[in-house]
Image (cartoon, rainbow, N blue to C red; front, side):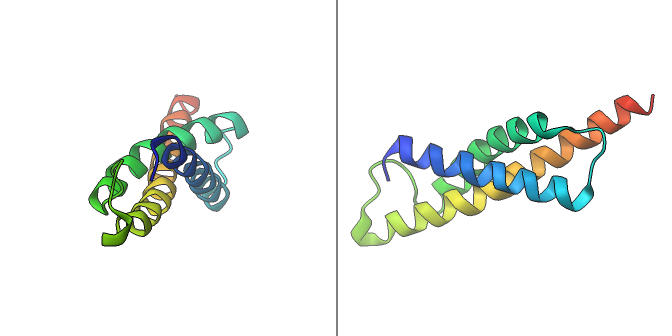
Length: 99
């Protein structure tokens, strides 16, 4: 998968993961913009990590399953990374608010 497409997939999946975790926990300390930013950053980090584990590195051989594995790794890693980073950011923001 080409690098720009992989990053776009990771950002979108990260934002969706961050929104899902933000909705599930209904963090009052966190507005929409921090959820989007933390989801996007976490999505790229998680998607890059998991995408590389599934063979999503640039230039992966599609005939060997690299393209499909890369897409799945980017989506799952992006959503997971976005959710994790958003949850951490919400916990920090909530702790700072309660000080």
